[in-house]
Image (cartoon, rainbow, N blue to C red; front, side, top):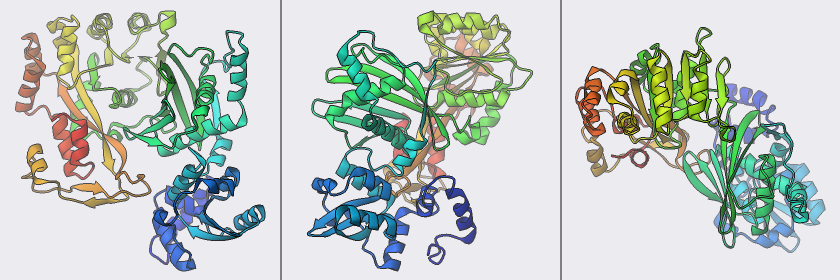
Length: 561
């Protein structure tokens, strides 16, 4: 049908038939997930061909009582949600209304006749979530839970209650029961499938707020029952090797999830609030490896400008930007680029995010006294050529880093400033003499992340004239402005994925002179831009808007203009 409708060619179909068998997904589900077709296209086609009604949410108001007609395990197994019950007729929403086996099983269980309405996978997920509570409507969640493996990063020993308290022991037992395990696995499964970077589980007075951060933006999900919050938190604390008997002080932990051929490192953090413990999970997909600078969104011109700096035998390469702007990813990409057998690279991180072969990576341990400053002193006795310090936060770490660069080492690190020139003045503020800063600093890279326009639903648009004038784009001769219309692939957001926006300041002779004269960051940036050696964050963001990679609204939300 899809080929007849011109939605799929023969080569695509053949490849999809081979590939989908490895995923345990139905062919239609696989085609939608991989972006060959949209869910609505499939639903429209099947509806016309088989003369089956298409699901329209307004025609079927949510009735919670329908959840009693069909249990959740059957709903998930057969991917069918009850829509309406009338006498002995049960109306079902299904992605595959021709699944005779499923229809027969549901008729036998309910002792009712069944009629079907076709819907998309996303619509079915939303419907099941509304009827049965949070996370129950995940595509293939049962398969995902069966395939999910959870590993701890330490010796794997589960924490034992330290208080000898019966209630704590009982809580641990309940947290390891099947319903709680399934619910937590469902949350993690959905987070991985949506590409979430963070999961927020926050207790409120009368409910539990659960949010996923996808492409830098938080969005709220249907809430689990308030009574489940303690068990959910306890289950996650057990996985992360935290002490479930402690709830009044912050705790940190980590574990690894393997699902759908992906390996996800999860950092868990709890903090007490007035309504209970708040938990945030940071998810890092390590299965894709370290990306190249090109993949991160850095232009060829910027890479050409940066390349000579990263291959110099000594000096400092700094990344700057707010938390979550991709600084660590950029530094890993640089390390991957320069990693050779004849170079000894040692990193000092908190935590180690990506594991790279042939690089010595060190994890901080504050309890044992392993800090950035103390670790950096020890590294100097390991004959390094290149040193990466996770972050320079204090004068002591800054001083040791500068001395390391002066003594013939390449040093990569991070400071928190708004722009590239701000890194210079930050070092001076931490007590480093200007002549030392000008001598060791090679390049400062400022960056932000912006969401990319969804490739599946993008369409040309013309930004408002006032916005174009504000950004200096009103006289651009050639442009390709794009915006997302919203579709299944981007969850109706109009954006899918993110890319970097970069500002690269080379510390040349002019900048060195200005550092020695203690010029401000604004003066340095202004002079570098006038000389043509600096393209600002705003310039790079505007370029990506013109190319149709992102929108003006998104660029404005990430870049201070």
